[in-house]
Length: 79
Image (cartoon, rainbow, N blue to C red; front, top):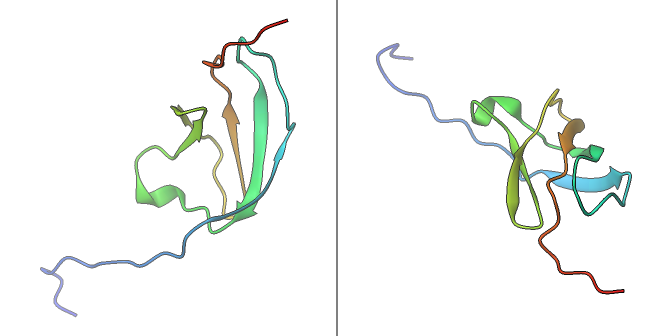
């Protein structure tokens, strides 16, 4: 290969298996573990997940697990 040429890499779409815990405080701040397959940390300088429309950085990304912290909920709750 010509070292002066850019390389293009293909990745499979990630698959979500489960999120633990599956609930948290409406004020946010819940640490969650996200399990699945096909997670790729080198695609971007920061891997992000989306909670309720809000982007949050993921940490310690491996091919089958990553971690994130939930933001505050934007859903209005009534009692």
